[in-house]
Structure formats: structure tokens, C-alpha cells
Image (cartoon, rainbow, N blue to C red):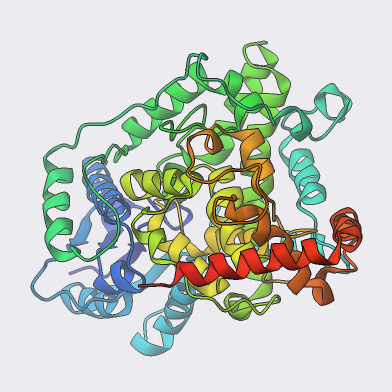
Length: 512
């Protein structure tokens, strides 16, 4: 028997153009895809997230086989499943005559540490390849960050624009004369607008089999499968991509920050799960968006806003994750320590904005970036919730959440637990922002116009209490100079009323 090369493919590497597959003869390789218990339970992932990933893996394995690859697929319910990646590598080495291992680098520190140990552990050469689905290499990000006092995404994003040539004119200048059109992307939506809907895919036999297993094996995990709609194949993901580009992108720019009750999707792409797992290529998507702008089919603020999310923000948070290292998860600059309220797992709260954002999260394993940042994240921030608990929740409940992308977004951008590496100020707000960008407040038990008392919007008192209790850490932040001046000018009895109202509400959160 001729020795083979073993190529493990992880659950977020579902791409035909994976770097470990490049220049390989199919007859010389065995591709190993592994469903392992350790990956499904290190946090309690949403049932729809587990279903999506496992179904997409099974479909991808089928597609690879149809393309001529030899695929060794380990199912979660296989009798001898070891439950870990390393354990399954050991078993694969027993099943096959393996001369070497090729693998594309993992996206997370935890898994990368396993891979880096395989050569010593098994005595088989292991070659680790960079993940070429990203635009910036780890070294390129490190070179950009080296010596900078502030690592602001905006300036890194400009480098990515220059590298890719996206939305640049013939002179290498940004289209329209500006790099960033975010100021044009903050319109509240009205219900009389025609809103596109994402494609909802009917589960096939493979997906239904996974759903049955998940309902049984992960019955105590959060979320529901009643609304499962995700694409699970490359072709289905491409259909959703086409649907977004044709029907939603043109207005995505205007309304990307808007929120409406009962409308979880609005003009958002719903493509991040497919990009992060490998079913869609991010650069080719951005190139098509650029082409649509060039053909005058979408406005510049929409094209630029979407591209910035992918080649700017997505690449940037990956760079931060790998630069800061495994201890990044332990940061807690504001020393927040309250427990995560139970309603994050039920959606059962009188605060309508949170009920909406969490309810749709439990139904769909999805919420868009403003719901995550300015509703669920904002509340956790101003309420002083332990950022590690918040991180765990985000990692659990969203289908697009892998630690490399979720952790910097949550710990850094949302909770300011890294002390300002990512965000120049905490993204804290009172109810006024929510009222401006949504219709949530008009349907709420609480009154957004009131600042104190049992009927007042809790965000109002919590916002000022957040500033007051963190003044020693945030008082010299120049982006918070205006609210701190306002607080200092507030009469002492009004300050006391706000802080008392906040304390009373926070006590009520934890009553049985």
C-alpha cells in the first residue's frame, strides 16, 4: 500500500480552494473531516449553529468526494469517535498508511495549539499552511501594527483597499474622494419601505438527519430549530449571495444601522456564516460589489459600507486576535463582574429592544451588527456584566461566531474590556440612540423619555451610572468629554436619583 498524505479539514474550512489542497494529487491524499464532541460542547452552541456547521460539513464532504477526493468522514455519533481533533488524528493514523499531514492553519488559538503538537505527538511530519482565504497575513498585520500607539481599523482598512484595488480610481485614490461613507449609513427605516427577504432553504435529508440528532443530543443547548433556514451547500450559499446583491445591497448602506420590531433581516446580507465557514469567498464577493458600483447598479455608500465590513473590519479583528494572544480573553479593563441575566437565554424581558434582539437570536441564531453592539452589547456594558460571560454568550448563540472574529468584537468593541485597543471609546448609549434608530421604544413597557423611576427606560439611568462609576478609567477619554461635562453640570440630587434608579433596576435583574 502506498503511503498517503492526510489532510484534515476543519469545520470552518469548507472551501474547495483551501491552501492545504493546493498542488495535491488526489490519488495521494486522504481528506479527513471530523465531527467531534469537544467542538460542540466547549460552550453550549445554539442548536441551529451546530446544525448548520455539521450539515455544511456533510454536504461539503459529499461534494469533495464527487470531485474525486478520497474522504474519510467521522460523524459525531460514530461508536468509536474519540471526541477531539487530536484523538481523531490518532485514529486516522491507525486506519491509514500515512506518511505526512498537511493542514491549513486553524482560526483559533485553542485549535492551533493542538495542531502544533501533532508532529511531536505522532512522529509524522506536519506541514501547516497559511489560510489564504484572508487578505492580510499575520505578518502583514503585525508589520502594520508595529510601533503604532493606536491600532484603528480605519487606517488598516485603507491598506486593504490599496492592496486589493477595491473602489479605487485610476489614480489609486478612493472612489468619490473619501475612504469611508459611514456617515451616510445611519438612516432609520420606515415600515412602508419594501424590505427584501433572505432565501430560506428547505432542509434536505442530510440536514434533517442532523437536526434530529441535535434535538436529541443537545436538548439543553439554547435556541430553536423551528426556523432553521441556512444554506448548507456552496450552491445554496451562492443563491443567497445573489439574492442579497440583486435585492438588498442597494439600500444596505442607508439602512444598515436600522432596527424594526419583527424584522430580523432588513437589508442585511446574511452571508457571514457562509464566509466564515468557507462556503463563500470574501474577496470574490467584494469584487462583485465593486463591479456593481462601477456599473451604477448600487450607490457608493452601500458598496463601500459593505466592503468595509469584510476587508476592513473582518480582517482587522482577525489581526487583533492573533496579535494579542491567548490571554486576550482574560481582559477586563472596567472590572465588570455582574452575572449575565437569565433573559439572555429566554428573551423574557419587558425591555422590548432586548426582547426583540434576543428573541430573534434564539429563533434564527442571527442578529445584525447594530443589534449586537447597541442593544445586547450596550446593555451588558452599561449594566456592568462580566465581559467573559458576554463573550461566552455571543460565541454560543450566533451561527457566524468563531472565537477569532467574535472575541475581539465582543471583548474589545462591545465591552471595552481591552481598554481601548479596538474602540476609541465605549459604545455606551442611553435609550435615545435606540429610539432614534428603531421603532422598539414605541412598543416598550418602559418610557424612553423618562430618566428615573420604575417606568423609565432602564438604559437612561444605567448609561449615566456607567459613566459615573467608571470615571476614574474613562474620565480622560476625549471622546467622552461632552457627556462627562454634562454629568458634572447635573445637579447633585439628579445625579443621586439617576444612580439610585440604576441600582434599583440592577437589583431587580437578579430577583427570583
